[in-house]
Image (cartoon, rainbow, N blue to C red; front, side):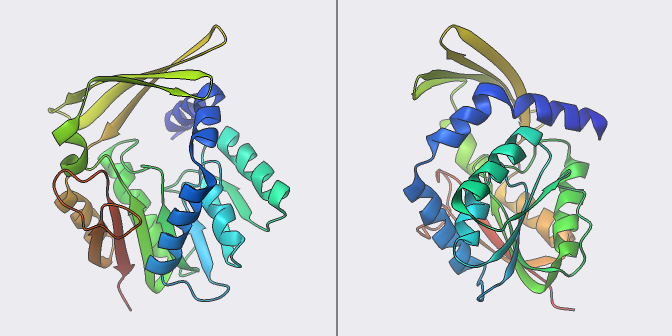
Length: 251
């Protein structure tokens, strides 16, 4: 776990976090919050778990709607940004600095979500422990949303080994390959701004839709429903991404 902590702290820092913080327009966050509110079936004042919460944009969007939100993340840089955003907006979000598989709660939350393509960052065992930890933290009948655009049916049909884009005044270059032996994308990100260069290696598991559903089922989730976008576009081969909604089994 110490190695994973160092890896996350190194990756989610510097220009990468600044780009991620600034790339998402407010209207996108609000559209995603609409989706979460609807698909998680949130009652007034519901307790909601955001894990991992990143820079806190979804936590704050839901807290602004009156929900009791707890955000969990292993990156101290991301949590610092999240706390600052909540303070700026005057929102009472609870923040926890911990690994996404290390959740101490039992039957506590009405709903949970993992946005930002956060599944598959470490090994398969960690993913299984993460999903089980979320299941333990949820009340029976609680719903869970997983945002996973790296799902095989969405990622691989149009995968390019090299892409770049400008994010404000930062040049963002991605160079990677699909390792079919490991079922992982292995990527190096290069960020350039004002003569400053950051290189960040990363790897992510590429599960199929069926594999994600089985992972959730093993942890005690049922009735998975897949969407390609927050507008409820049905998921299919070649979709832009995957938003998977599942429900913790009733006792």
